[in-house]
Image (cartoon, rainbow, N blue to C red; front, side, top):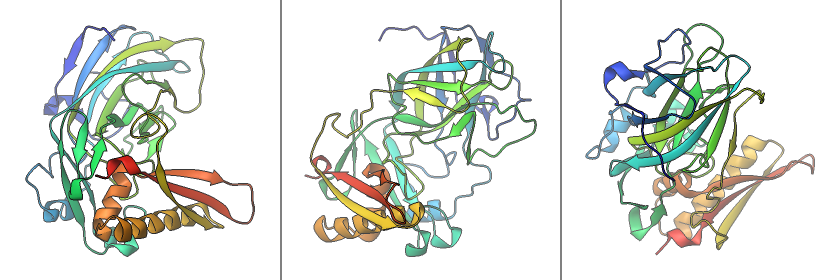
Length: 316
């Protein structure tokens, strides 16, 4: 994939913002077809680093959270158009973290089961992240936040996703993918942040492998396309190795999809604790980094099925 970078945006303070707001001035205005390389801080804006302990995460503030690099305007983009973002490349800085906050904060899927915070600092090599017990997670880097400014005026929190994108955490927005976003303001005003070196579908403990990173993207404006919410084209990978491989799966069955999801993850934590010799905290972190959740059925009322999958290949 050949390309030349037309603009580089560092993660210096003047290039970073912490809210979605269509009144922000663009850092640059690019022509369709041009390429921008974004330097992105980690999701907690440096409050956790390579030498941090769990107390640093437990005491981290979420006000503000998500330092966004941008915004970038794209020439010719108008409300009703679609902005196409081709993700060309990602480059990490050698480390990342996954952790869960104290249960009293109510964050993540199972806060009631983890009273104390937990943290793992990952060493990232070119294509793998190292966990405990010799477990290795293949890297599939992507931006957790990728979006354009909402049409509604004022400041909007970065934590929830919107019709215009934002904190979607779609793990398949990897190198080679194209993301399509509905434009609601002139120029689109694109920003990105919250990069992950890898993540399980669900991001259940509230963090993937959070990592500072460079994101390189090419922009285009589609005048003949109209969408209400984000879409994407992707080749995956849909499994850690990029091909079908052996998995162990646990099911959650309940009359509520969220409760079924919790059951599937609880059962997976039990499995990882008893069969893979992990602590419950380590298992919860691994679920967030490498376990994929799938909605298996929503037609057999009154109960629905959610399944959690862990690949055998990550274990030594």
